[in-house]
Length: 295
Ligand SMILES: [Zn+2]
Image: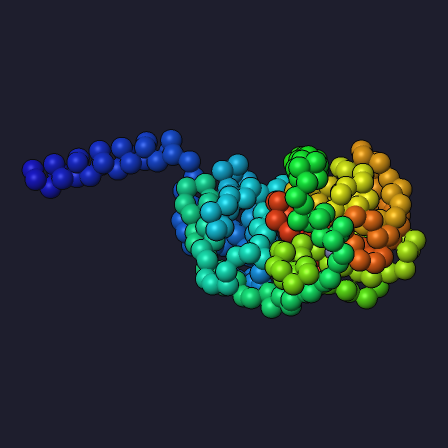
């Protein structure tokens, strides 16, 4: 009798479990998640970026790194998240959380020093006033221009506009490296957000990859400036140009001439200040040349 009763209870529990689980979304355990996600590296320098790939199609997937959430971008039958590591982040171990449909996995990411050099420049009073303005009109103009720059990088194409690798916009000696701690007239200014390439005035500057021009105008600090959207919140910018040869809304191709080398704005001689931002964070332009985000 007891055996029969136990059997009946077991059968009822079994039927109940089957009916409950049939209404649940597919369950993925952490080990399966590990297999479904790949990470390009677990040890990275300040100013570089991580590439997280998954073949899971759930719309809930995202990545959390150092309190910021990053969404995946669709690419063929894959999803790829590009996670920037700011040059301001203190070298240490950080947790990267990858959220799958029902579970999350954690990876320890070691952020190493970018070994950024110091950069000292001396400028005259007029130029110093540009970066440390006291005049209300200059302060106001800088604020307005910052809004323009932010707006240019606000909306990005959901699909990748770029193809293959990114290229140098111009070849020449590097006068200031990415991330250099900048001192102007002896006092600390900031980190250098891009790479300075010194060239003769008038030399052709090319788009680093395909994209859409989001800004093409003269600004107080960066002079004649072009910002290009490459999709997935990846933008390149080109500053201090003597001449701009594109306009807002233009589609440009990798290698296409967009302007000429100059020394407009806050500049001490003809050069290109070239930046790359990923999800609003400046990253080392060398990294985007050396790492193919999509293969
Ligand atoms: Zn620069």
